[in-house]
Length: 71
Image 1 (cartoon, one colour):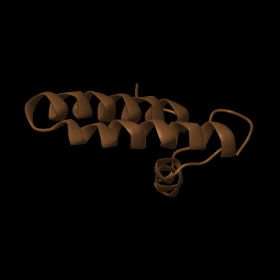
Image 2 (cartoon, rainbow, N blue to C red):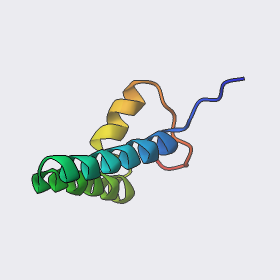
Image 3 (cartoon, rainbow, N blue to C red):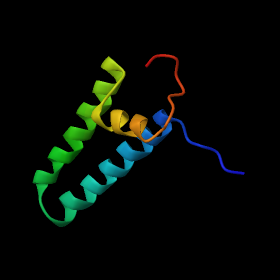
């Protein structure tokens, strides 16, 4: 049985993956990759404040449905 993850769960997984990737890139290559972490945080706050961020808009176009009542 397969279950489809709601939009919020996918966004949370995507943000966590990008944050971990940023940590690895900072440790291996350059502290400038902390900009990626800041970008992830800004996008999370955009979703909280406005109900949408660039990633959520793309995921909605791919067919993911939001679990919460606000759009």
